[in-house]
Image 1 (cartoon, rainbow, N blue to C red):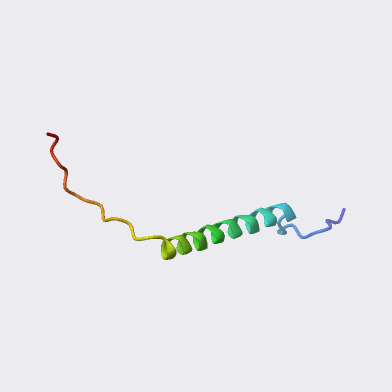
Image 2 (spheres, rainbow, N blue to C red; image 1 turned 60 degrees about the vertical axis):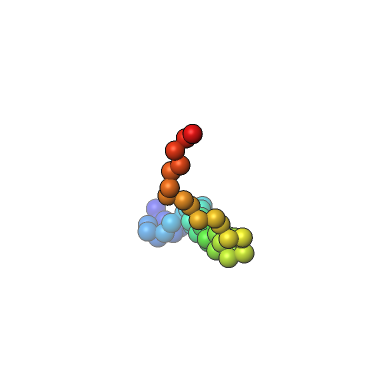
Length: 53
């Protein structure tokens, strides 16, 4: 009984899942870069803790 594909070939769905994950990660990285570039400046965080009155 001959196999129709080599033993080390990955199934098509697995390749599609990998491709989809890489695209999603790339989109999130680009979105983060664009948001940081064009968003307004953030106020610096203060390390000083004010005592309650």
